[in-house]
Image (cartoon, rainbow, N blue to C red; front, side):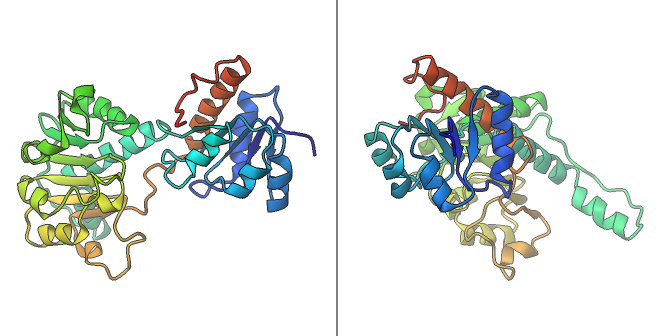
Length: 317
């Protein structure tokens, strides 16, 4: 085996083969050797002299075997599962996939809001029964959305909400950083933000600050006609409190791409609500994931080769 410039580890993302990721990289780096490891022994052999490795996990055994590695490109936006300090101590840069999910997940949110407002579930149920009956519906225009988290996904979503005439309130840990929303507040103003919003959209990372952020108290501050959308992480929402709010008709409904627990057990009460849309953590599962990820890695490899390793896109360390 030749020494590859980029080693794609044998890890699938969203059920897509790593070979498809490698093909995207070959399209962008035709003058480089892109290898895909198919077995643990191949990973250990190929990692020895690879300049870049990419995948989801990168354990201590692979790190110890890497002699010439300059960058590990994590295929996830989150890197909490990695021993980032150990990788950095070995002189290896770490990048993530931040921004890759901006277009696809923001489209998922827009679609879910429209489905709620236009009552597509009722339309589908009537169609199944060949039942023609008119019903009223809502619209997004001239409404307000509280977007919790203004990273790549939150920012992409705000841009699309603006096209629908939706006013936005951004909620972030450091409001002084500003953002693309009409106004930005801190987590200490979460109650005021949700009280003014028809839509409360969670696009934040799971941290000590955001774990259980949407609890019974915050749900009580939400408007009775408000929708909750969670494309962040399940534990950002207190599930029991959400079930209670839905049972008591305290909010209008919810769209959940993530849940706590996850997977959601088949006997969980959330499945029974007709005003709750649940998807199996796949709002980002579109064919362009690897293409966007390959764009970032290819650009960063070019920077490394040009001697600009200190200016990598999405660099964590």
